[in-house]
Image (tube, rainbow, N blue to C red; front, side, top):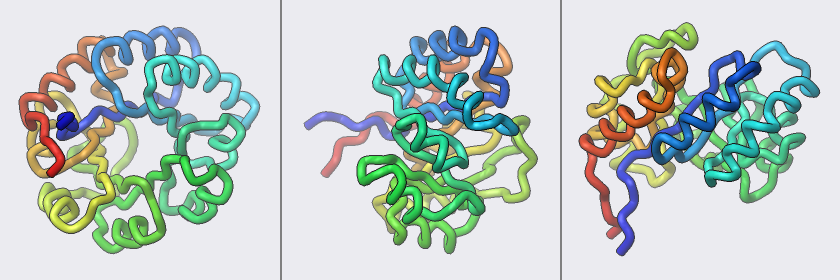
Length: 215
């Protein structure tokens, strides 16, 4: 029976994806297995956001990495993205499903709320995201999640869960051990050597949770 990685890496873009960022993304994706890439830009019109997304989407497609658009169902539809990640004010799972189709991957930010996560799961979300688990340099965090939230979710639900917020190779192992299916990482990768950071994160994930086989 094929082993399924206990936890996988989910990269989130910096806000600035211009300049040499496509080359940086290519190096990051080439440094280790990455399950998904979230395209997160702010304050751009849809035309410019689509222009900047094109080379990044092509890189992800070439490596079979899911290309997920942050916040905007409309942009995800325009790009033909693999999915969309919804904050609590970005529309409903039903709206995203209607716009993007049955195959789209739809994730929902649930902060540290069990109630929001259960609602998202019942609405048909493909994953729920909990956090922030650690102080984040990427965005201000109003909610702090604890490890027992991941343990609770894994014990009761089959919908995958994503841990987010200040994750580094050093602090990733407890999240893997608690049951995170994906670790969403931004600053720890893009603040320096992206390839080295991805390798270190993959090593930390692998060491913390050896492959698990489905029953």
